[in-house]
Length: 93
Image (spheres, rainbow, N blue to C red):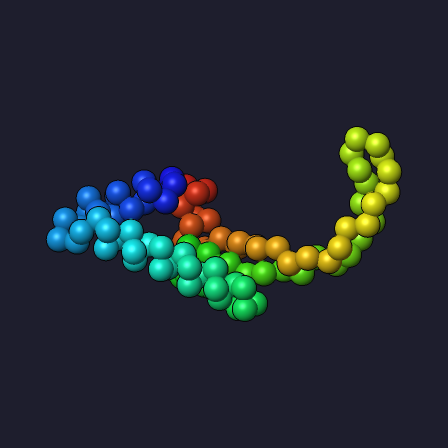
């Protein structure tokens, strides 16, 4: 599902709301998640999962074309851990 499909589904399920309002709500939620993660905070949505940021240390990597060793700088990457309810649904329990 992509963002526009989510907005359309929410609009269809809530006919009393204008689609532009639903779009604003969805965008606000995503922006808040992004801002929280940028601050290094963890975002937990009960039953769905938790978003967090993990630090990857600097390391020696390899150029796949040449096999030459290159240095890869330290970086922060987003991480998602599924919640129990989502995990159970995916596994048919």
